[in-house]
Structures are given as C-alpha cells and as structure tokens.
Length: 374
Image 1 (cartoon, rainbow, N blue to C red):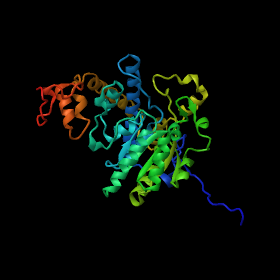
Image 2 (image 1 turned 90 degrees about the horizontal axis):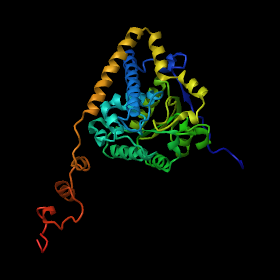
Image 3 (image 1 turned 90 degrees about the vertical axis):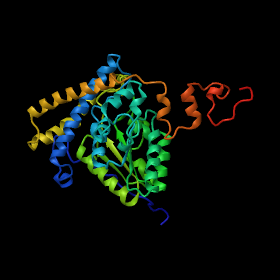
Image 4 (image 1 turned 60 degrees about the horizontal axis):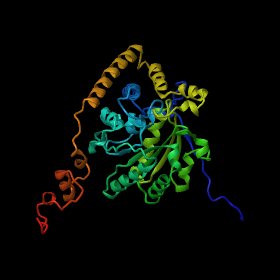
C-alpha cells in the first residue's frame, strides 16, 4: 500500500469516584480499605486547615509568598499513599498533602516559605527532595534518582510532580527522553490544573490532552480525574508495578484545579471567570471523598466537628514550632552542603572568610606549606 498507518492508539481516562459520589465497584473494590479512606479524608482536612493558616501567616507579614494547595490535594496524596516509603517523591511546590503523608514535618514547609533554609533540610530516610521553585528542573533530578536505584539493583522508583505549564519546558522533554530510552523507572505525574500561572492550558498546549505528549517517547500514558483519589491511587499503583517489573517509565495526567490563586502574590480574578471557579468547587476532592464516606456510614457530622478541632490544635503547634525555632548560625550554610566537607570549606567555616584565602597564615589548612613571609 502506498499509504498505510504506522501508529494508532487511544488514551484512556480513569474515574472511579464521580462528582456526585457514584463509586465504580468494578474498578475500585478493595483499592482503599475503609479505615484508610477515613485516614486520607482526615489528612486532607488537616492539610486544608494548614493552607488556611499559611495564607493568614503570609497576609499578616509573618511568612513570604505561599502557593495554596486547596483543591488539588489528592494528586500528591494518592501517589504518596500508593507508593512505597523507599520510592522517591520529587515535588515542585504544591504537593503538601503527599509530603505530609510520607512524614515530612509540617513546619518544614512553613520554614521554607519563611526563607529559612532549614525547611529544606529533609531526613534522607523520607526519600523526599526539597521543593523545586524553578519550573521543570525537578524532573531531571527524578530521572537521576531512579537511574541510581536501577543501577544499584533496587526495585524502588521515583515519582515526580509538575504542572501542565512545565510540559512546555525543555527539562521536561530531556527527562522524558532519558527515562524512555534508557528504561529508567520513573513516574511522570502531571497535575493539570488548567493554568500555567495565568496562561490557560489550551494556549500553551495545542494538543487535546497533555497525556499524549508521552506518546512521542513510546511511554505508557493515561489521563485520570485528579480530584478522585481512587483513580489516582489505581493509576499510580499500575505505573509503579510496571516500573518495578520492567523499569519502564509512565506518564499520568491528572486533571484538577487550584481553587486559590497561583500564589499569594497573584490575583486569579484578573484572568479566571467566576463561573469556572464555581464549577470546580463542585468537584472539590474533599467534598467528594466525604460523600463516599457518608454513604458507607464511615463519617458523620460529629466526626467532622472533632476533626476540625484536632486540625486547629495541630496547626497551632506547627506554627509555634516554625516561629519559635532557634535563630540560625552563620556556619549552618556549610553543614548540609556535602556529606564530607572539603578542606577548603572547612577553612572558610573556621575563619568565616573567602577573600585572600591562604594569605593569612591562620586561614591555611594545618598540612599546607606556610607562605614565605609567614
């Protein structure tokens, strides 16, 4: 035949818990046990209150710019729930729910946005990288971490999170290309909230879905309802199993929405219609999961009230720990830079000088030859 198709495919969209609370037992049965569903709902409530207080801290001048997570919590939370504790979580900056579920102390996020670098000093056993503010750079880090896991014969993987706008960055394509061509066990998790700051997805991406960008790399891909925690958990579990068994990477596009502004430095009213925001408020993942629990007699108003009180108390303590942390000392900048501090930095740390290093005998390492005029 002079003309014949060389490639044909479809991209599936996955939804298990619909907006009205309808649950697909065929796909979702046994996916999240009842006690876990309750724990996940409680966690979202806690994270939602954290968001509210962080916003107030910024508005009262007690913290710098802050990006609200409200509305898209179950993307990172579902992934963190589905993955193993030895899998890397490589976030951008709107993944609080997943990071806290993994065990990151909540005050670390406050410290980060307060400009205290100790917010980025994360226990390595948590397998979490610091927040990535530059758009897209973290995807390359995730591929490197997963590559190291594979090289060592470890069946763990890396899951990296990013927005729809980041898929237009060169870093995204380089990371996807490396992972696909070298069979690196990476999950690329796109949180498509419809806006790259103030640029709508349909302007920065002309394709019908973000998910199809993975097809160019021969990568398995799926679109999920990102406000449905069951769909997120299933998609991530399937991708993780593929990565562990074959080292093949996967791409997940989760359609979701940030109900707040891009950050506290933004005013989304300038570019978003009120009708659009109202429509997505009806798809709130918190409300949807509560309907699921109530339909199964797993949650009621008394539990809701008690959890709100618990969340308030917890976040008061979190803020107290962040704001009352002892002041940093100038030598802190040297202590987390290297596993083993090089001699030249030991000298800088001891003398607190970088200028004229070596001209002053007191700055020289103990084993260095003395200057002729010393």
